[in-house]
Image (cartoon, rainbow, N blue to C red; front, side):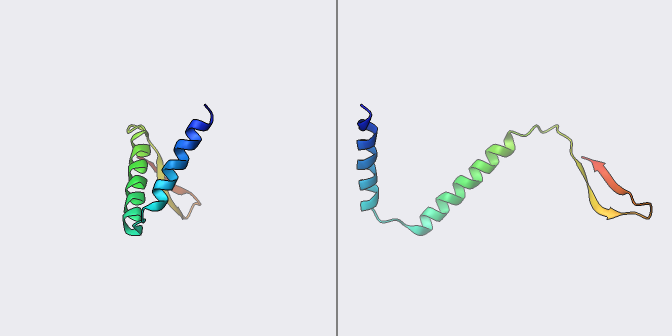
Length: 69
């Protein structure tokens, strides 16, 4: 029974190799999938989460300005 998935994969790969690969379509599909995965990860973040934002500039006292958004 271990060889059954291997045989199925072998037939699938043989079928895929016989078809011509459209590079433009492949790039488009990869890009679409990447955007979907990024959106899925962004949705996991708590929308009420606060982060500190600011700049790397230092005032005359040597302090950085930080804000919480």
